[in-house]
Amino acid sequence: MLAKKYKVSYCIAVYNEEEIIIKNLQTIKKNLSRILGKSNFEIVLVDNGSTDKTTGLLKSLHDPVIKSFYLKKKGHGLGLRKAIQEANNDHIVITAIDIPFGFGDLRLALKYWDKYDIVFGSKAHQESKINNSFQRMIASVIYRFFLKTLFKITIRDTQGSIFLKRSSIQSILKFCTADNAFFTSQIAIWGRTKNLKYKEIPVVMKDVTEKRVSRYKLFKDGPDMFQTLFYEYLRMKKIHEN
Image (cartoon, rainbow, N blue to C red; front, side, top):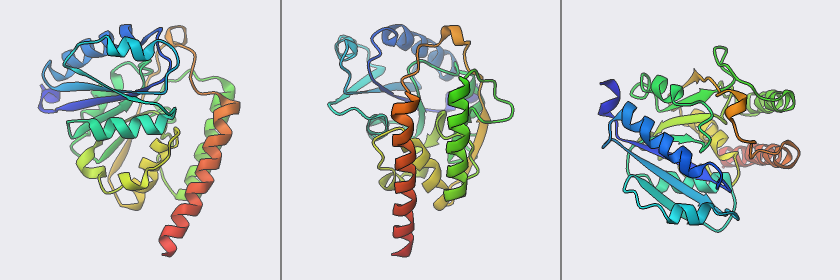
C-alpha cells in the first residue's frame, strides 16, 4: 500500500530499440501497475533520433498510459531532459528501456522518496550485484574518481536509475544542459551544489544472458563523457567566480 500514494512518471530516452521496445513496454506497464496501481503512473518515452523502426513502432501505439515524443537529434541527455519537461507527475523515474535492474530499484526507492530529493540506483553501492565487463568497470572507476575529485560529490554512480522529485530539482535543471549521458551526472553535481538531499541505493542487474548489447561504446562515448566532465568543471568554476 505504501507505493500507491505516489503518482509517478516513468521516463526513458530510446534510440534504435526496435527489437525490445514493444515487449519491454508491456513488461514495464505490467510491473508498474502491480507496484504503483493502474492509475498512478505514466510512461514517458522520448525517441531521440532513431534510425531503425523504433519511431514507427511508437507511433503505432495507442495507449493512454504511454506518452511518446520525438527529437531529430541523437543525445541521451536531450531525451531525458525532454522527458522530464513533458512529465505530468512530480515523482519521476529516469531509467532505460532494457530495464537493467528489473523493478527492485523502484521498490527500494519508494522507501526513501519522501525523505530525499534525489535517490540514485547505484551500481557502485557495496550491496549492488552487477555483471559489467572488466573494461566497463575500469572506465567507471576512473570516471567516478574524477567526479569525486573535481566536484566533491559522494554519489559513486550517477549512470544508473534515478528517482527524483521535479519540484525539488527545478532550481538545478537550468544547469543540466548536457546533450549526452553526462546529463545524469549534472543532476548529482548541481544537486550537491544546491544542497539537495540525496541517497544512493543498491541495485541488482539482470542476468547477463537477458541483457541486450549496451548502447554505450567505451572507445566512442567514453572520451566524449570525459571531455564533457572537464568542460563542466570549467563552467562551474566560471559561474562561481561570477
